[in-house]
Image (cartoon, rainbow, N blue to C red; front, top):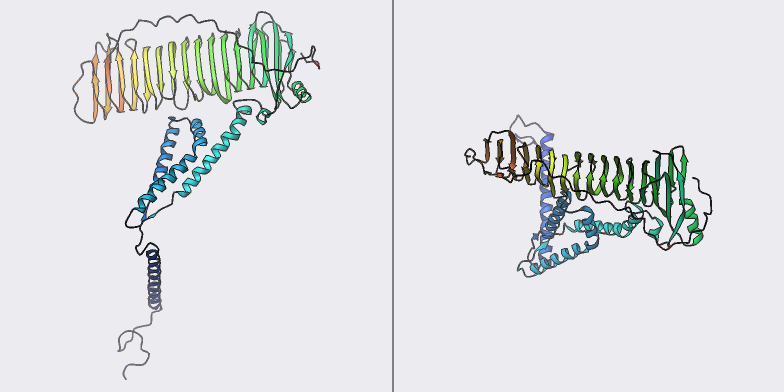
Length: 545
């Protein structure tokens, strides 16, 4: 034999092919992969045979359920409405805490309907259940919201931002007591500081130089002895130091103290209130107020007013203030009228705003809206959907989004910038108007004797003018520049997606009409009293005065 034994692969004649271990390893790996594929195919065939036998000899294809996409769309729509402010977050969670089981009922009914449809099919199908985890998550959130409302809601209403009474949330009886009236004399132009951590504060101005303090105590206790200890611990104290007076109550978690204080008109007043409402009327030299958790109502204040809301989101109203009003912090409703000085509010406004008859400039600043008005003989309204200013002296400057802006009878220059809303401006004379909008229409109504240089531009919209203007082409972007009369005022209107309408409006008086005389404010009513323990003829312990 010419061929040696155990010849390696290759040619049968020398020279022989050299041995390559990498090639042998590659061939071995390919054989292993082929064996694994064969095993996998065999396992698939076994599973298919088992499924075919389970479903009557026919393999059932998988069909996705419509329940999951519907839930995702619903969650996305609700989240979008909450984020954009169309639905109040607190109101939604209160609603969801009560009605979240309806989500499970709806999902169950949808699955039952799908089962009925699948049962009538000639070829069985299998429904996917990947949304089960989402349903469990929403159910857990619903249970959490229900627990929040049923436990933390009443607790917070009594003890947190909306109230004062910790132990009342546990059902202890309420007991009341009227502390003996405290009275002190202070020099003219003295200062008075009032500190009340828990309870309402009512302040009025008197004609004399006396400080009188009436205290209505409330305690939550199971017996009279326990109530008396609470009364003694939270009783008001009056301390006089020179021309300064301090009216102070020590806080007690088991009760509250409602103060009714009469002060001289010439006194400078500082109030630091915790959990409770504040009502003040008739002061002659202004006010510095800090209200952590409670509504504030002011009237007939001769000087300037500074109000701070560090934690609460409550109502603030002021009527007949001769000086400035400067407030900061988050609030709900804001109501102001007959203000002679400037008005400044910095912080979130979660409710409605109504301002009328102010002699000084107005500046409202929130995360959504920045509004500046020169003065307001008319009125102003602001809420989650609309911003309306009627009969104002300019300049008026508005920057906002997701609101309809209506500026009517403006005696001065106007500037409005908006997104996702409509802008309407009606100047009361030949004043400059500049309006910019992203998604919304712009409408400007000019006086009959208008004189303006006009520049208008829109994209994906139309331009309509009651005045003669150059012809426009049919392109998506339309722009025009023209003159009305002598062109004294400048009008610039721009919107990205919306129409522009320049109208001939009505005539207005040369100056705004004078404001109406304000009605005299009512004195603040003392806090309501419940049936209470009879007060002794003299206090059990002396009070520092």
